[in-house]
Length: 566
Image 1 (cartoon, rainbow, N blue to C red):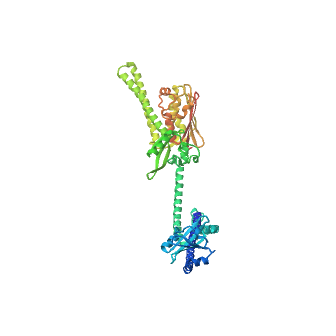
Image 2: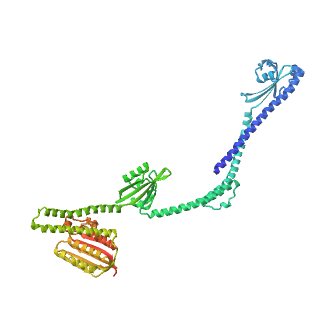
Image 3: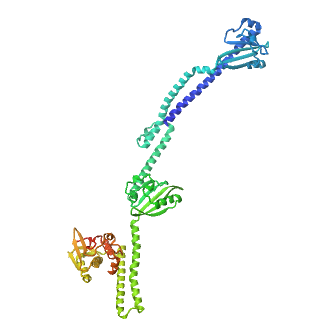
């Protein structure tokens, strides 16, 4: 702005100077022409008196103005030259009847003309007058052309213009500084480098601008402070969200991404993705196609993808400014647990249907055989026993499902009491000695009393399921031990057997509902597949921790850790 003001003033000054100079030269030229014509008129009046008083003979004898700058020509009405002080033999001169000034004098008694000689670059001024004796007197004078005179002085004129331009530039610089200074100080004030706007000396015309400027500055400061607070709050919120927040432009370039968004898609610094295409963050074809579809039809979408061993649900929403689409907002939710739970629920439903259907099918089959008379009388008791066995299995299965559902839903009210795990373990051991004896399995308990706060019924089921499960999967002649210990304020419960063991690939899923390593063995042992799942949920109900160590062919050890009150 300063440079523009400076140059504008300088050029304006120079332009005005040039215009004034041209005007002066034109005025001078007009004065020069008028003066030349006036001089010729005066000379003509004097000479006409001589001609009229002495006629041409007297003029010829006196040779008036001979050798002067004035050229005097006397002509008749035919344009024939009778006298010319520049020529002694006028007979050699051509007729002047076609000259404008001669024609004007014949018709109007007066005539004048200016003609330029291109050969000598001179202006010739002519003045003619018709005398009383019907002779034409013409007076002429030759001078330099206006352009010749101008060309002789143009270097000085150009130098003067240059000096005027330099002076104008200097003065305009001072003026521009004075004009711009308040604006520059106000700019510093806006940038926060200076707060002395009250000290600015300003002219009256800019005072309202300064007042408005200061008011706007305060408004801007307040709004900036408010925006910074909002941005800080939003940053805190998005930084602590488990969900990913990603803002994309209409060109699918990443404008904003929070830490969760980075973590869900990648493990690198988010700055590597800012300004880059979304495809650098996630190359999933389905998701990128969904983004293109939303940009095209402006319809929000929900997409689930499998990415980096996670199931991610992405909610794609359009960002509109008025009716214009300005970007896309992505909310990324880790649905891995939900997806796994859904899969487990579906598996559970399928397994429940299968597990319930199996004993029911057996019961119906045996009953139809008895009813149709296909079973011999002596075999009816055996078939009835099988029906009873399948019914008990069905009842146990339903009972386990109910127990598991109550624990999962939390519908069972927590009624905790001091429980001696060692004494409870002795009760369970005693109730299972017959089962262990049938398989010639040595069943024992080790350790000492250890008290904890718990639900006695649940803890009984926990120990019963663990020990019964060990007995079922331990070959005859094996050993099952229950060990109860105290360790730094915790009750440690371990059930150790010399059974068949669990393969490594199955150990992570052994506590899932209806999961069995060997389906045929489980069917043979009348296992529902819910025992260890119930154990896990009872441990979680009591805020405990469970772990498993097993080796195929050598046995299994399950350890549980509870907080003790001893």
